[in-house]
Length: 456
Image (cartoon, rainbow, N blue to C red):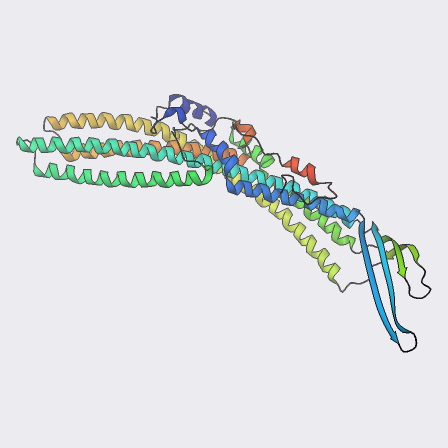
């Protein structure tokens, strides 16, 4: 049995599809469409912004390690109106600064930081999954336009053929070789062909609108693409194994398990003692009492031992454990889903490639049959209805080929997407790859700053 990769390569080599759109020099390739979508798609850019927001969870969690500094200032003015001494003003002021440092919090901060880091890694994989889905959507939109352009071209050619048949039927009627029934049949088929062409043009416009939504630019010079050939598996077993190992949905679910595990430990930390160290310096001024200014400094160590907090701590621990169990189950669910998607895409690709071969053979046979029926009609052995039926067979076979070519392209990229291989790097797309780790490295240890890394 010929492998899918080899059959796809053979199909690409012998493809004889015609370029429908003008200006070939400006033609967009399927790789170019995916690259544009990767750079311009607003949903993808929104997901990247969401990941940058998730990155900030790490420095937020690390704040538990760091000191908390606060300053305060107070001033009081008191006026006393006495009968003997008259009016006197008393003023006092106080200014101080305090520093609070958590020494031990039952490892809550440690586990919160680890949970935040795991959440970042999970969100990165989720972003990668979003990127793959956008690239797949761009490839599908491109293939849909290529198919719809072919269908429009086929139906226009069919319309021209039917006009010729109508003219021929009318000419035979005028010389007494045909009947009015032949003319009516040709007219009815021509009207139906016009309706089919209008529907095909409407479908093409809808596909172009979807393309603009995903890619962010109008389609130009769309060609019939070949199925994907980069990073394709050699067998179904290899495809499944790769998907279970590299699919970002599975990896995101595994990181989510780590996050939930650290959150369990953090919740359990609320049951452990805590140690806090606090230092304060205060300056008192004024003319109250002795009227002397003074400065005081203090250092306080406080140990807190939780005994009972209304039962909330126990409920939070149980809740965290249930969430951990849920995340573990979701990993199994993700694996099953990925395996099903890989097998389905592999089967669809195999089927589409087989349909391409069958449709080509069908077109060749249908064209020969049509030529024969036309010649037989010339000698009176066939009717106009026979010619129209044969032409319909050709039309059906041509449209079936266009659909099979589209299905082969979409199935091949769907297979890569399910395997986690539909990426900028594996497909060699001409676009700068978004590196989420750069923002993470820039913010993970920040102590100060209001501006984001892009200056906002």
